[in-house]
Amino acid sequence: MLTVAALYHFTRFDDTSAIRGPLLDTCKARGISGTLLLAREGINGTIAGDRAGIDAVIAHIRALPGCDDLIWKESTATQAPFHRMKVRLKREIVTMGQPDVDPTTKVGHYVNPEDWNALITSPDVAVIDTRNDYEVAIGTFDGAIDPETKSFGEFPAWWEANKERFHNKRIAMFCTGGIRCEKSTNYLIGQGVDDVYHLKGGILKYLEDVPQEESIWDGECFVFDSRVSVGHGLKEGPHQLCYACRRPILPEDRSRPEFEEGVSCHQCAAETTEEDKGRFRERQKQISLAKKRGTHHIGGLT
Image 1: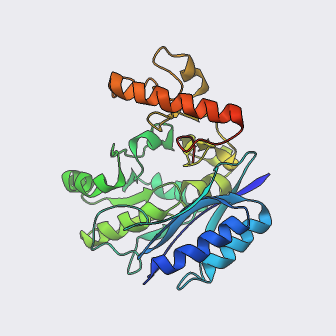
Image 2 (image 1 turned 60 degrees about the horizontal axis):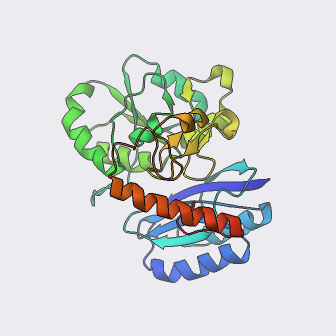
């Protein structure tokens, strides 16, 4: 059984290039796979490996400037959810495109998972899911508002167009692990919204801590690794991934006429041209050949 650690931390890194090399070397030396993003605003990512390896990488990250109070969330996987290790330098660790947003200054009120149900069922609270539309599609909290955004960078425009709907309402926000809410609650505070709350530890912490019989979560939670989705107790869900559009599908969706392995599913078949599909078929052919050779093709799962 492998340990999967999801983490993020907002802090100021003056030289991300100097941090990248030693961090990548530590991960590779310990047999860790996954992706970590580094930006001037901090670190974000998910890694997987054995217990000792994860502990070593977490210790390395906690020794970085401002990261001694790093908090991370763990789950397990029966198979390696990543095939390689990447440490990437980015402008933002989660892209919102708002240069004035700074979660290190002020964020919304944290709400522990055990207190979340009481908050979001209050009549004066509006609950907003800050994730992308394909994530919301497979699971969300009962009664939550779906902004129908395709990327987090669309959230500010959605808020500007819809803010009058939330007059005299307290705002409760949630996301997978909490990172988007650090930015979105800071953004709303900057827009003059005072009563802003967010789920501490995100959906993953809620599914881990709240018993299923007490839960008001409906469906599965999308995760960005080969498990695709998890449910209560962070057990691996039934979803698979369409490798053409990277959206989650259920096993029965593979029987639909629109499905072709690595080429299309019912969600994306009408979105791509025949030229696109031709390229996807060639990529899938190379992935299949690599699999037969017992190697990993770069076009497959990261």
